[in-house]
Structures are given as structure tokens and as C-alpha cells.
Length: 209
Image (tube, rainbow, N blue to C red; front, top):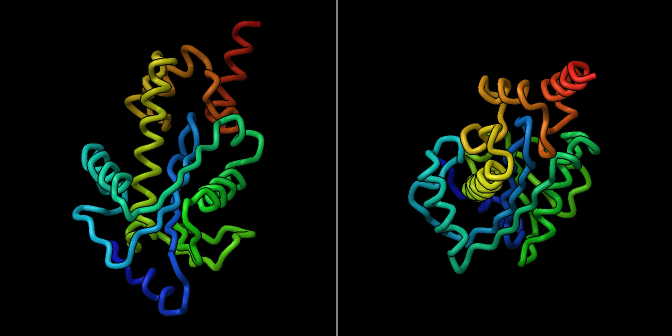
């Protein structure tokens, strides 16, 4: 289970307010990439808080609500839309989202714990932790907030583009998603720089020319 060990190490070094940062939505063929930054108070505890991938949708929703309504938890999230991912590339979009999520925090953080690899040009000292959402409680909180917010955005997209079933797969590359993509072609929230979408888009245009 994640803990505050890494956060406490940074506090011992003199850093105030440690932000955990994580993202959701790197791999899907459609929808935004969402990054969240979270500052937890010292000695914070929340039963069940873990890497969002280890939780059910109901568990994530419950923990999300408890995090965002906690008076001492500071957080901010940022969504990078599919068109921007196509324009910038996935890695740059991911780095930009993490920097923007951190910059939008309502309280200044002196250091950051980041899931995965280091983010270039980060404004404060950072510690990058592979699988950090299973290790750091702050990163786990960020993973839950990013995941729930993104899932809600995809549920909303499913009412605008119901034929793709976004409420079921959240834009990930399932067999059903591919089937609907081939039948209807890409919609405005598909990532056209992603190979499966690009291939379908080309064949879709060719079939109608």
C-alpha cells in the first residue's frame, strides 16, 4: 500500500508542501489526457486510497469525493484534448499536463513526487518514482483524481457520440471500439496521430472517394 515515506523524506530535507503528480489517459485512442497534482497534509490517512488501477470504479468515486471535499487537501487537474495531443505528441502533452497541474495548485509546493520518469524543466525539485502510484500516497491520490475526472469526461462524451460506447471503454483500444471506429470513422475526440485511428481514417476516406 502507498505511504507517506517519500513525502516525509522530502520534508526532512526542508521542503514544504509536497505535491504528488500523476496522469490518466496516455494510451486511449480517444479523449483527453488528464494530469492531477495533489498536496496532502502531514500524517494524512484515507482508508482504501491506492493506485487507481487497483480500485473498482465505485471505490475510485468514493475516494475521489473524500479527497476533493477534504478541507486540507489541495489539488488541481488539467485536461489536454486529443487535438493538442496530435499537435504536440504524447510525451510533450504529458509533460505539459503535469507542469500545468502543478502550476495550478492553490497552494505553493516546494517539491514534487512524479509517477514514472522525470519531467523536463520542472519548476521545483522532483523525485520521479516508477509505479509511484503504488508507493506514494500523494501520487496515489493524484492518480485517483485524474482517473475519475477523465472517466467522467468520457461518460459525457458518450452522450455526444453514443455510437462509440465511450462510457464502456473510456476511449481505450477494445475490440468493440475498433469495430465502431471502422463503422463510423473517427469523431472529433479521436487521436488521429495514433496508428489505429490513423489507419481507419485513411481507409474510411478511401472507401468514400
